[in-house]
Image (tube, rainbow, N blue to C red):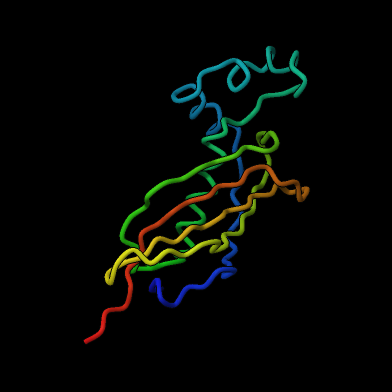
Length: 144
């Protein structure tokens, strides 16, 4: 979808992402190797009472589903930035669902524009667990 066809408020929902324990542990051991993510006995002593999924894993599992929804199609030129806010813990077995909404549009030049997309992610209980604000560079329609 071209920049010129987008408008604030446009929304796409994408497929749920399941947080699988073994995948979560493998990711944590490689990229976020702290006891809260990798040591079940330690995690039991925390206020959470069990292992937490690494925040980046939670985001990336949902991000992959967002990309599958292909909001912009071939008109996407590049990503520019992403800001993530983790709001509630995510655990193994959680199923995360998301909604991406166009929240801002800025024309950059005659060839492309900057699209801000806010992604809200909830767990199977409807709790908001993370929010991401992403900027993408998207092609504009050219005349002629």
